[in-house]
Length: 79
Image 1: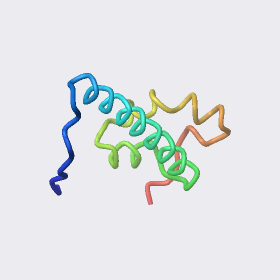
Image 2 (image 1 turned 90 degrees about the horizontal axis):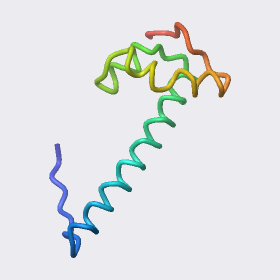
Image 3 (image 1 turned 180 degrees about the vertical axis):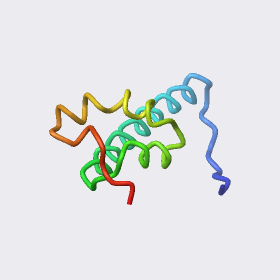
Image 4 (image 1 turned 180 degrees about the horizontal axis):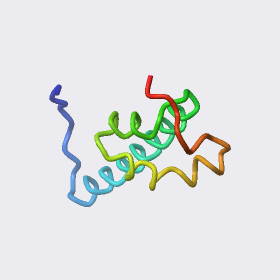
């Protein structure tokens, strides 16, 4: 992994606020990429492997959202 040098925020409050925003951004990015993977026919198992979590964890987190978006929520290709 590449080291990233950043300027330290002036206060812990500023630093922690930045952490919160980064987590929100990461959550939105993950959701968008899970949706894209499902649209491309990926299985829950393949998505889970790419994220480093269990199939059950990723399914629990995203299945309802996927179903409401009209995406497949079962099966999928492992290719």
